[in-house]
Length: 87
Image 1 (tube, rainbow, N blue to C red):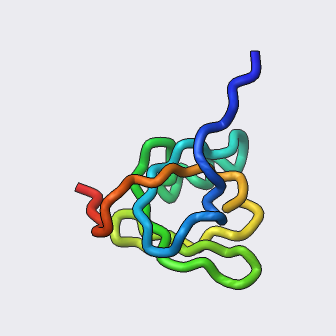
Image 2 (cartoon, rainbow, N blue to C red):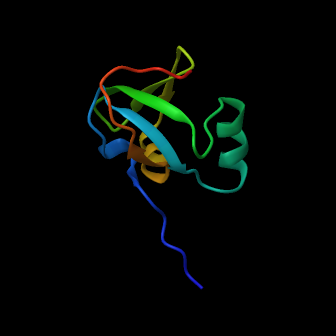
């Protein structure tokens, strides 16, 4: 049975918004993302959307640049609120 992926692609979000990661791709890519703490359910903030599709996020006060191809495969939903807090 097919289960649709929830959320919108990370590369389509508005700069400055708080987000919750709803899906990360499986396989080797998922292992790489886990090293940065990028997992389903984690709270992040979109700091910047760069030309070419790279997205810069903030996670636990760390800035992480995510390339365009990977950013299209990570799904997020809006967390609400304007201030970022990961407490």
